Image (cartoon, rainbow, N blue to C red):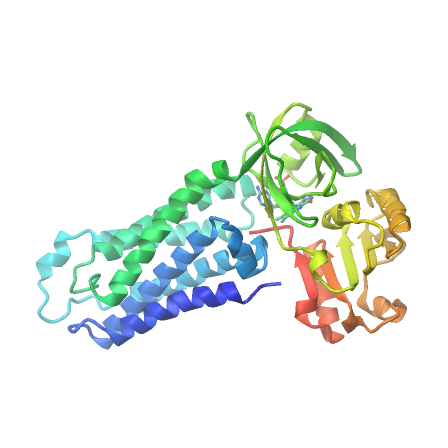
Length: 419
Ligand SMILES: Cc1cc2nc3c(=O)[nH]c(=O)nc-3n(C[C@H](O)[C@H](O)[C@H](O)COP(=O)(O)OP(=O)(O)OC[C@H]3O[C@@H](n4cnc5c(N)ncnc54)[C@H](O)[C@@H]3O)c2cc1C
């Protein structure tokens, strides 16, 4: 669930600027000039926040409620920034304030930089929001945003004082954030991936029904994860392209680190068909706040298809004597696709506190709130829910649970996509 602390902090950063800019306007500015430069500044700050969020700093996960939420706010901030940029561009007075020397405006690159930033922003945003572009093409294109940011910073830093007073309080504020933003940008482009990598080697590649399980052994310091967390997996070598996020499916105390990967597109197919033991892998993380340990004693876990992975890791890590009462609803197309069903059945029997409910859609059985309501011993709002699976399933269940009076903070979801 989205934690409010992060979005509130983002809002506070923007509001402080707006208040400073409106409270201490430049003497020769019309109210329209003050208002539209404020919107330009707000847009720049939102872009800065968006860039800072992409550094994946650990505390952001606590502030926002997980990396998937961090990326949601990253995206929303970018889109709102673009809207404000448009209002700024069309709204800002094109004539200079009274008394300003027209020559000064012609001598500085502020206007062309602003225009280039606007064109690059519109292009990058159209690419960023286009879901038809494959992720591997989308990722390098998305880096165009870095250029937009640098152009935007250049735009206001080179603006003549008659148009933007960078020595005013709000000007200093914006400049300080521009410095932070550029540092964050350089870090996320060049430093982040190297700094956070754990080096592993593939020890086995096991084909499963429409999925592949890869096991890895650590060559250095192993990753220290909690069940339910995920990591970015980057296979070294030609043709493996960018890192991909996967939930860790092994138990906490296992020596090998395991990922269970559904065959979906080019990269996941290549894993199944071409990946060999001995290949070197960078694993970055762990990330995520899908933590069943931090919740109450009555829990319902709802897994759809490959969404079983976080629960798999949790069950593989659990010790007998766990005080929780857990129902695990595992929905899949058919028995074959319910990978690890046998192991899950055995684990449930060993642990004693897990009730496993497999559902196969080819037999007409789906995860449904009305059925849960009729079968569970206690009212629905007394349980805490953990859901991971296809978006329509998760959204549908969430809507129905809310209708039944289950509060949003008792429903925890893990989205298997960031875009
Ligand atoms: C937090 C998280 C945990 C996940 N855990 C698992 C798991 O345990 N098992 C599993 O099978 N899948 C998991 N996924 C999904 C997995 O990352 C994608 O299915 C996989 O990357 C698809 O790659 P592809 O190129 O084969 O498929 P494509 O068809 O190219 O991509 C399918 C979708 O996956 C996403 N995607 C693709 N590449 C990337 C990337 N490099 N980074 C981020 N997203 C990408 C995009 O939204 C894309 O639309 C998880 C995703 C996230 C975000």
